[in-house]
Image (cartoon, rainbow, N blue to C red; front, side, top):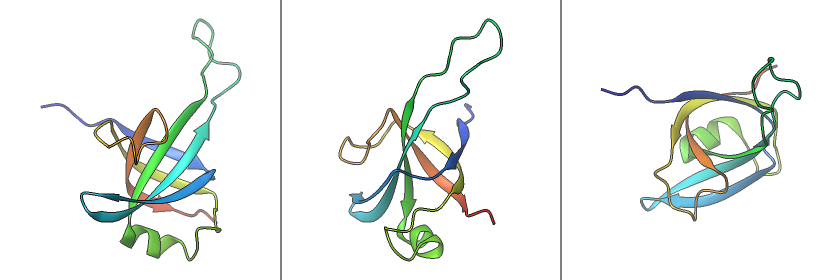
Length: 103
């Protein structure tokens, strides 16, 4: 059995979009992330990555009141490549399992 790729996304989303997936409303948080400018010796420099984080309606209501409110977030989730292009706005998507707004 394979283990899912778990990731942690930190930062402020650049855009929030509403969409539907399997006939259910979802919210897509679009992130553009760079990486360290100086990686450890011998490793290539990280490139910019566009990521779409997917939240369900309950997660959205629990953490946000409007789409204009875009705070710094810490999101833990799992990578998926199995989403339609109408949802994906990056190289890959992350299904959010935990969303936190640090103080």
